[in-house]
Image 1 (spheres, rainbow, N blue to C red):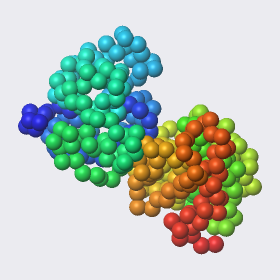
Image 2: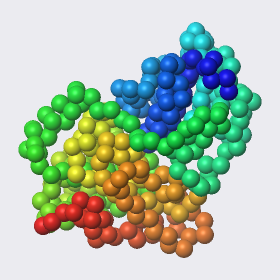
Image 3: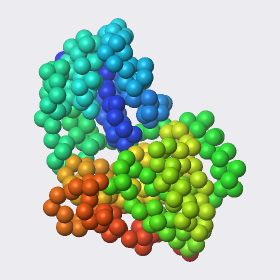
Image 4: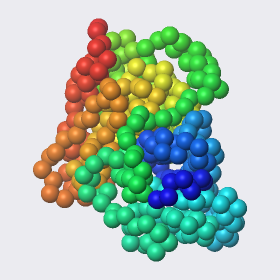
Amino acid sequence: MDIPNIKRILMVRTDRIGDVVLSTPAITAMRKAFPGSYIAVMVSPQTKEIIKGNPYVNEIIVYDKALKHKGIFGTLNLSNWLKSKKFDIAFILHSTVRVSLLCFLSGIPRRIGYARGKMDFFLTDKMEYKKSLGEKHESEYTLDILRHAGISAEMSPLVMPVSAENENKIDEILRDNGLKDRKIVVLSPGASDRSRMWPPENFAKAGDILVEKFGVCIVLISGREEVKVGEKVKGLMRNKPIFLCGNTSLGELAALLKKTLLLISNDSGPVHVACAVGTPVISIFSRNKKGINPERWKPLGEKTAVLHKKVGCTECLAHDCKKAFLCLRSVSVEEVAQKAVELLKLTP
């Protein structure tokens, strides 16, 4: 790569919360390699708050494929606008047909990403896709895209700035619920599908143990799609938690987790948000399958714990599991509570 001539850089990651958070070390590495260049990051509407305030980013571009940029005309409108930005290179951190086509139509001369078998000819640099093997962490797979271009990309801490506005909003919520200056543990019982969800009754039992033995306050969170799961946990608890399921923006979630002693969660986006703001995490993994294993998706932080049981499955059937999700049920409430004690050095 002719580094002196790279002045305008586009980085693209339009998938989910955790994926975008785990791409922030690549943004840091890019700024270190190109201190004077213009760096834009393209994300989905759902994840723009992760990048907002990042000191290494000059511009956030929102790709709204469901509404504003839907269909061929929306794609063409966005590509024409991107063409006016005159990017020298695009680093496509998660290759999709739409994103690769978009960068091609935008006239970006060099387009680097993983070849995934669909429309790979839109990429100028096609990297062999090995993520499904789960041989390294997702953050390292992302950094490899930069390394392919000759950039010395090293791992660095996750980045998700918390705004004063979001901190004030969370302070107000905590104060209104009598939690100001109290010890808070957050439970996140939701996930993208049920094959990744530790039983709600276990979340409830773990929450009650922490309340009754250590005097913490429990806050329940979830996305809007998993509110019913949160309601079930709330209904099963003896000590009623503060219920914020579906009621916080992503920025407010980061502010809440920043003020939290611990997050207990399934393998999902909030785990990585917590790590980015320095909060200890217990992450409960389910399926024993390469590519979705802890080796690829474990939390990155100083105080983290992963609970993952192998229960003899030769093939993971995901939501069609014939063992009633034994891998999840094998993680006991007592194990989770003990990990919390170890991480936080809690005393009764």
